[in-house]
View 1: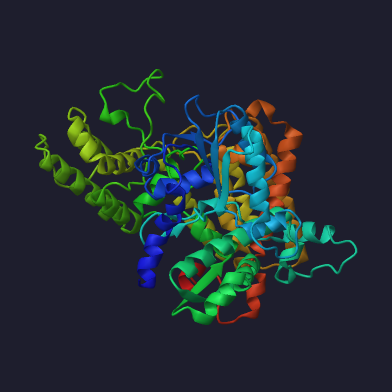
View 2: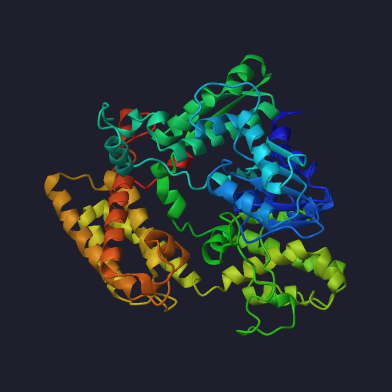
Length: 575
């Protein structure tokens, strides 16, 4: 097998071990593993392998009276909350056979249990098997515990994500302070580049080691010895962990193939991540449509257009949403890949072409129209299928992608999206002409201009926070300054914190992003003191973002100081 073929097939291969155990079982799966399954064939994969049912990994779920077999698929260490949930589910069920799959390998379970020496066999898994039998109520029942790296989500054959590790974030200066505070009797680290694995919080160590283990399993599968390169303190730790992985050492001696892997701290180029680049359809779809619950890589597509139901309060949420992951149809997969890489105009035209072609195959009465493709036009093509269940089922993948495109193109948040793009260009130009404090002052009237951000052209609090990340990500190079300028910046930051505090406490609802940042679920829980404290911490993080590239100044080959006369170049593209 060629390495490229191996990379394409590996995500699906990781699920084979799970599929071999699900026959006649009820399957309980956490969100992270569900997202990997979502891009590897979805629930159909488990049902085709003989699974009876699939349920959320929750203490409020259980097996039925006539369901003696359970399979658990989790992305965490088998202790603490995870073990408690498994115990709860088993206690309210009638299982006689339990299989537990964890994406965390046994060696990391030893670390999580403070075992520093290598032991023969899998004693932690063996002990958990005994617990499973104990919870089932009979030590003669069957229990199995094993590792399966089901963490890869193949968005295309060449583009894989690992949503299970989406919470791993590069280290910032504020993290260095926290790490040093926990080392009172040891030598303090002078910079983030000095931080080692053992000084990190145990949870983060487990995540990094699990990521390195998953990547090592990929290289093992394709018979490849890797050369690791890293840019940034967190990337250095991950690359070092992969290099020292026990399997990696043996593999590098005998693997026939060779490959390079580059780890990059995303904080080195957040403008590429948060910027509104303007010419990609999928970027807009992911920006404006709501996320699938529990997912970080897919969105909800409203399927109401495929019915004769009217959009009212009564019909909201009664239909299961569509999505972008289309694994069953080769035509839909090709359309998705085109949407992902093509410019918006080309992508929208391809969506129309595929809808027209599908309608023609089913002899539906389609009216061809030339010229600009509109959201209304795409919807009219989709609606042709709603009276033909056979046609709807045959082309459901293309129809979901067509609806996603149409709903994004007519979304009320799109004018704000365009406004953000315009503001980014203005702020970037201002950074070349003024210092950071003057640029931040330009955001004050925008924050104060609206109390709710409900008008389609007014920026929401989410948009404003994204603009702040954009500014701080490029500010250090564009606006270097001394102590006086730092004081001026601090003064303007305090004004921004005050304005944002007022804006936040007057919100009538909180977006998922604001709920995560503030730690509350509704505006009634937000006090002025709590909001002010949260925003102070946020600006401390933003200052850390502005210093993220400081260590690169030692490497002239990748870091070239510039000025306002030169155009911003994306760091990822340079690499």
